[in-house]
Length: 124
Image (cartoon, rainbow, N blue to C red; front, side, top):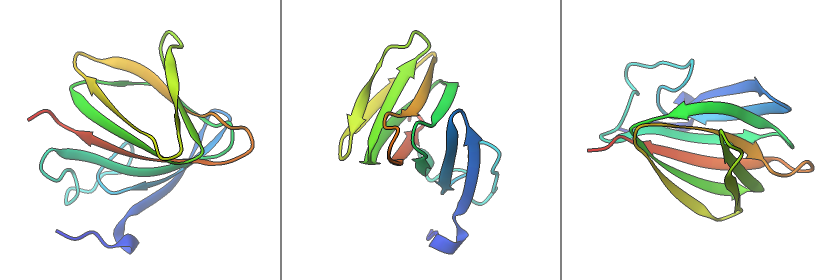
């Protein structure tokens, strides 16, 4: 299957402190396309840009493997206790989520946009 750029869903989502420009390759959040729900175990392939200082608020994950690549800027993540860390440009992180977790995704910089690519895989 081939997904051409013009067929990829694009959105601008207002979030805490700014907005997120998303390019969502598979059904995600409020976007649903029955032709593009998953590819094997790949469930999500998002290319997102957060405006300076923007925060994708606390949200849950469960039963998923998450790979996050910081393409530009500084990606900060924090769990429900405020614990987390920063990914700098070019860094990648893998997270295994079993029973569940809550976390937020934050543009750590107030002066520049932050772009990250996130892949979610379902356990096989």
